[in-house]
Length: 124
Image 1 (cartoon, rainbow, N blue to C red):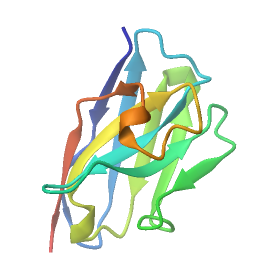
Image 2: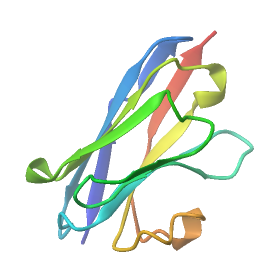
Image 3: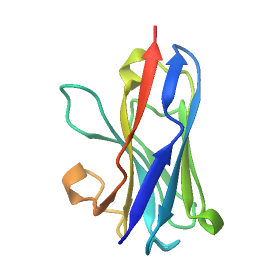
Image 4: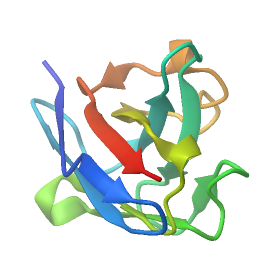
């Protein structure tokens, strides 16, 4: 069964940076679209970023454009999220996600594979 395991969450100061990693195993192939969602207390899980299987296209939520960078290393079956200029609105549990399609990322319920999440806290 497909497994996604996140790491790299923790505490960051406002204006600081964190880099999240997601390792995939159990049947994930390089052709899968991979990305990240996040969920803050009292809010719905929201799309953050995704990257196509060759890495040629990236997509970001408006709230993180210019601050976050998604990348992937297919040789390592890994996807990364470099988060810069963090603010308190970025505090959330971040979930790695994967799907065969690129048209299913508008709502979290349409994504097929999920990690268990890693907590990002921002001190202001």
